[in-house]
Image 1: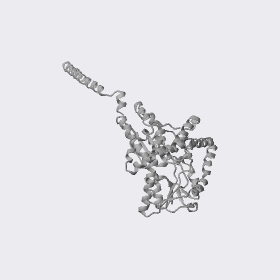
Image 2: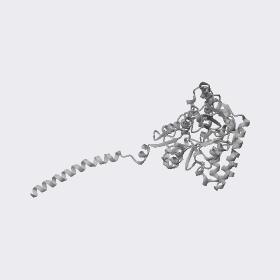
Image 3: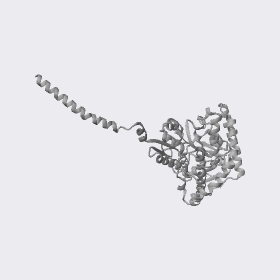
Image 4: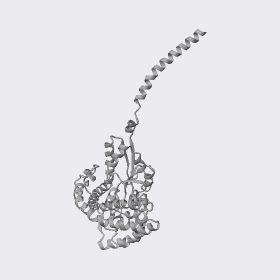
Length: 412
């Protein structure tokens, strides 16, 4: 019996020695294959989701797409941007919440939906805006953002929310109506059902005698087609991209001026979590001022091109030509909505915000920047418009284009 036990123990010792001897090199080989922390970071792919209410064919959105491609190329595939256009990820009215909560990492959102939550953005969307065009508007908006950061830093979150601004999309002004009824005077406008998405819109259009209906951009086509609304106030880019010319017959230009603003910004947590090397590429990839101004110049050319296109469309469809509201009639409209501005100032002051001071600074910057903004439009837009006319608009889309043309430009 003792011999049997000894034999068994001998076999176990030999077996365990063999197993240990075999296992050790295998474990060492696995340890050698494990990447270090730096290798793990290099292998990580950062994926961001971009959400917007705007269609992919808009010129601003083309640059978002090419920016994503630029970032992917510069990071060796470690940063990827997934784009969700035309409310396909989250509806317009939920995009600020989605951006702040991290449901999306980046968004181009309409701020008119949150005039109470973002009170310092509201002046840029007002009916009766003092801003002349998008280039002028982008300069003033970014100037006001810098002013607010310096003078009232406690209110910065009331400008863009808890987000990091990347660039501004400013299609100003909106002064055109597409409608299912002819409108040549204020009397014609009375009782007309127009879309509105903010308290300021509602007040302004009500002062003009219209009936306001709350519809966001993505729902406007159906609203027009089903008679929920009679018309939409906006600009030619908006009408063309959302095909709002299809369910309507009449076009009226030179009506009341209305501002527009939808910033492209990102979630702060998403930005702060970027690896250091990717964050450096991100930071170097844009300058909010020149990128915003460069975009608006091309947007203005795109709008002019669509404006020419709609004239041909009207003729082909047998619709009346575009009607231009006479200047004296237009002045009546714009004078009637002046209380909207004072109403915003009063509400801001009542809420403890520097409404009077803010508006005074905005008007000061508007006067200060107008000549330079007009010069840039006169210098660049005619050439850009010709590129649109000749089917060369794809030349605008490379990421560097809108910044490169203004790389040595400084705001006055």
